[in-house]
Image (cartoon, rainbow, N blue to C red; front, top):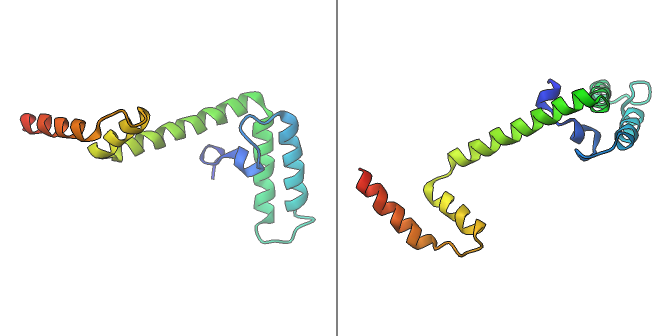
Amino acid sequence: MTSSQRNLYAELGVQSAASKEDIRRAYHQKALRWHPDKCSDAGATDRFRNAQEAYETLMCPKRRRAHDAELEAARWQAEEARWEAQSLSDLLEEFDQMWNGDFNFNRQYRLFQVLLEKRR
């Protein structure tokens, strides 16, 4: 799995706004926990390598910006997919929530139904 498919912040257990010191501290905790010389669990070596990769990526400003951009692009893609999957009534409910209930759902839904019927 590449770093672009993973949330390196989550792997280290830090927030995306974490400072370099927070990242370093989290990495050291993970490294002590998963170091192959100290942990004999089956996945310890992979977890240790993942922590190393996360640390190296997040400590380099250029690589960290690239990772942040990849995470943001993935969030946008997920949001687009969610909107595409919604039906008209789901969309109208979203509007109703955005306007704190001032959006007259039933009236607007009937209006959209009439408009759709006219298009057919």
